[in-house]
Length: 208
Ligand code: MLT
Image (cartoon, rainbow, N blue to C red; front, side, top):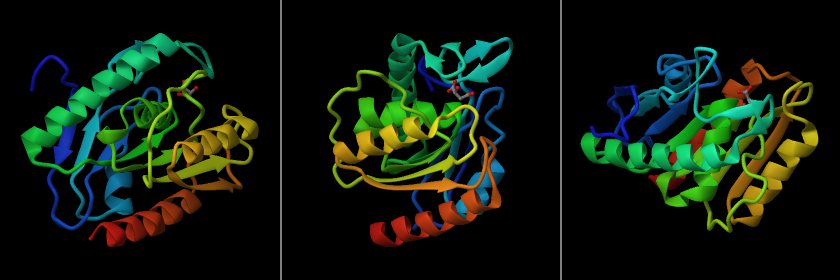
């Protein structure tokens, strides 16, 4: 791949009927982090897992931030476009349909930005502990795109009002949003896994 490439892992599909997953890790993670989660959520799906290209004190991320929860929005825009270009190249190289993003924390935030800035890049998204990524988002057309947003009731990083705003923003853009607030903090729980599995099963069945 070219310039816009990311260090990444790719696992080909074993079940051609499942939509590919784009796995996007949290701050300090890498391309290996979410492979296990991806396999549990959708066994047999192709997995494309890039490493964020921004380093914060040595920790990979998908865009710069000024403080926790305060984003460098110019960088969010630029990095979302870079990620969208990478996804398009990977689709060509590996012969993939548009993927469903599975993002955690910083990875969920870049997935939300990608949905808003380049809606065609994704077939849908599972956003785990996501926040509103842009204070002045464009008018995206997300007509019918399925989005599962899972928030933690006791999340110290994402206020309830912020995830509610993200759900509203994506719904207003036409996405079919399922938003659930779980009895959890910022970390993932068993409930995230089972809700994500059920949701992807339904989305794959609709797409088949
Ligand atoms: C972000 O910077 O994207 C959020 O604060 C979540 C995180 O801590 O990575």
